[in-house]
Length: 85
Image (cartoon, rainbow, N blue to C red; front, side):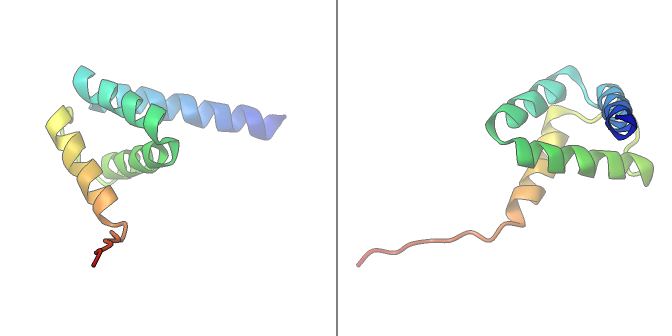
């Protein structure tokens, strides 16, 4: 039970931090990503928290900047192409 409460507190802090560093549009995009792909949204949130902790984020991140980070996260996945003959 105590671990659950601790995990809930960490989630609350993470959401508060994201609200501070993301613009309204970027928060909306993050919510849409979470609906479409929860795993990718978790990975994005973790990346954003790490960027804040390392001092890479100054001010608020715009929607365009968030899309750029999303592009780098999704580009890491190996793309498979199928050619038909």
